[in-house]
Structures are given as structure tokens and as C-alpha cells.
Length: 320
Ligand code: A3D
Image (cartoon, rainbow, N blue to C red; front, side):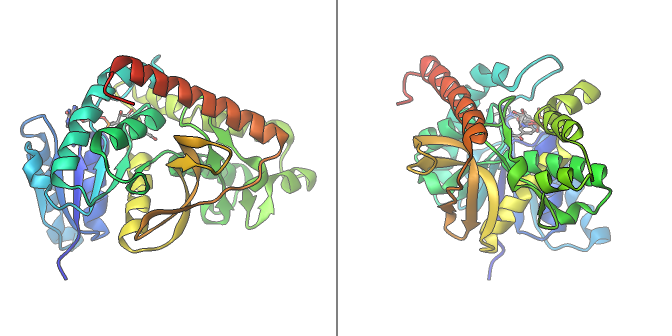
């Protein structure tokens, strides 16, 4: 059987890392696409030359034309600009919305059967716009944020409890912004919920609250340290986890920015919710029960995303 084709739209920091990870994991042949001439070609050649040492079989190609993504099985979109210190993700909306329009049209014309994972910020609004511009079915267009936010939460918790990250599960829902909702009650160390661990004296409520806040600020912390861009290793790894779930029909239960119509009392919007990813794309949205406090935080986050979507409609009148 031919190897799957993975198109990476945007060959910047995350795009290059995605290509390297896809090659090492032998997920398929990779096309790196970018408007910058030479960048995708240079990165593709560089990664291809890591093949003999790493021992992978994958064709790596760089491109400046959408024809090269033809027939892609998976498209991962990072095209656009990242934030700089002091900027919020929402400050990127004007410039990245225009980018989503050209990317959506490119995918519609050349890879209409792909599973599309959007990473470009502000995430929840950009994945909505990308689905609108591409016209692909909503279950095939999804945003990566919850996997990363949950991974950040899991990392901080594993350090606090001094246990393996593998034994920490965590759920972060809502929009990928300052209002994201780390769900303490549904996060565990080897199945023991975090509130129980506080009761057992393994940590304090105060420390847990600090970790929740550090998770919410996780992206800004890295932007502040890097000064010239935003995080890329963990964002790329998170998107690869989602792509692998689709390509291998793994039925993974992962928090993703998915189109929610009915579940969580929402009618027709993209926001971070628990989803099952398999060969059908987003195969199910898992409508978990939220308590009063969680619901209030989720509603606040949903309203923030709605505000961004309205702003997109104000910028581009072709958006319904
Ligand atoms: P960067 O290294 O600047 O790469 C972006 C690439 O997009 C550059 O190579 C550009 O040349 C290219 N590009 C710009 N316009 C177009 C276009 N019209 N068509 C094709 N390519 C284009 O950024 P990055 O890789 O660090 O980040 C990419 C995006 O991901 C940014 O919007 C970040 O804010 C976002 N991001 C999201 C998360 C989430 O968790 C959702 C995390 C980290 C970064």
C-alpha cells in the first residue's frame, strides 16, 4: 500500500518540527508548503538527510505551489504569524484570517478528502474560518489546542507529584486562550482525581491553583523566554498525536477544538471539547457533565470564542 501523504501548510518553526516528527515516526511521505521560497525546500532536504542515520523511509518535499499537496490524507496548518512578547493570541486575528482564506481555498482545490488539523492562532476562530473557507465536512476539520494545554498541565503536575508523566492524565477544555478550562476534577494521577490528592495531603489547594494558572499562561511563559516566536516542539508533538490517531484509526479520546452542534448545549461552533479521533475524523464528541463552577468557566470561554468569531465576520464579509 502506498504511504499516506501528509501536507504541512506552513514550514516555519512548528512546520519543520512536524516534518521531522512525521518522518521519524514513519507516518507517511511529507510535503512542506510555504509562501517563503526556499524555506520548505531547505527544511525538506535537511530532514531527508537525517534519514540515513535515523533509518526512516519517507519522501520529504518542499513546495511553493498548492498543486504539490494534491491528494493529501492529512493537512496540518501552521501558516500565519505567531505572537511576540506582550501580544495576546487574539492580536493575530486580522493577518491570520487572510492566511486561512488562501489556505482553505488551496485545500479545497487540491486535498478535499484530507483530515485537516489547524494550529494557527487564535486557534478556535481560525479553525472555524478554515472550515468555512475550505468547505470540508466539519468532522474532518479540527483544531489542535487541548492536547497541548493538557500536556502542559500534565507536565507541571508530574513535577509537583514527582511521578512519571505517563501516569498523569489531565483535561483542558474550552477555547485556547486565557479563559481555557483545566478540569481539575477529571485530571488524575494513575486514576486518583486531583481533589483526592489534595485531601491526602500530597499537594495543597494553593499549589494546585498555581499549576492551573501556569497552565493557562503556558504559551505566554514560553513566548516571554524565547522573545522571537512561540512554542513549537510541544505544539508539533501534540498535532502529530492527533494525525496518528486519524491515520491509524486509533479512536483516541483527546481534547480538540471540534465543531460542536448539540453537545454541551452549544449550537454550531468550534471550541475545545473531548473528542474521539479515528479513521472517520472526529467520530464522537464526549458530552461530559460539568459542575456549576466548571460550567461557568466553560461558558466564559465559549463567549470569548464567540467574540473572536464575530470579529472574523466583521473583517471578512464572505464568512456567514
Ligand atoms: P512561524 O515559524 O512564523 O511559521 C509560520 C510560517 O507560515 C512561516 O514560515 C510563514 O512563511 C508561513 N506563512 C505565512 N503566510 C502564509 C501563507 N499565506 N501560506 C503559507 N504559509 C504562510 O510560526 P510557528 O510555526 O511558530 O507558529 C505557527 C502558528 O501556530 C502561529 O499562528 C502560532 O501562534 C500558532 N501556535 C499555535 C499553538 C496552539 O496551541 C494552537 C501553539 C503554538 C503556536
